[in-house]
Image (cartoon, rainbow, N blue to C red; front, side, top):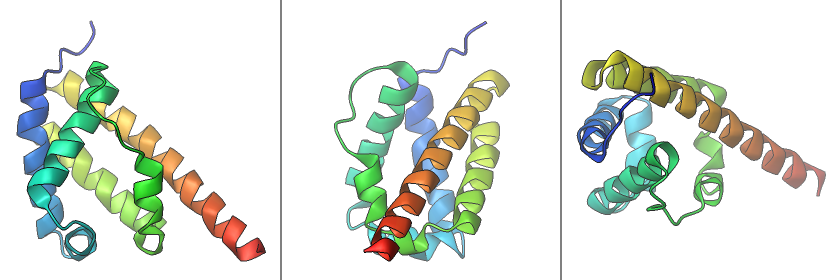
Length: 127
């Protein structure tokens, strides 16, 4: 059976997850220095996950470009920490099937972002 994720699930998950990110001693300072308006950012993230998981088309940004601005903080350790916190939070907030679907998608997105950041680093090192 397909997970039945809803906008309401995302509206509950995203603020809770990023509250935990902001409280994290490693991730919190990174995110707080990168994000000027948390309310706006949370809306953008809900739109992103809605577009990814519900095919709503609400998100109109370029996540790779946004993340490349902060490539210095985009280490394997920080990605792993973010994913572990995502896994814990989705498991706490959502039912098992929805949590698993979001965890799998986040892992693929993180891998893609890691490859993009690494490509950019290698490109810049070669110039």
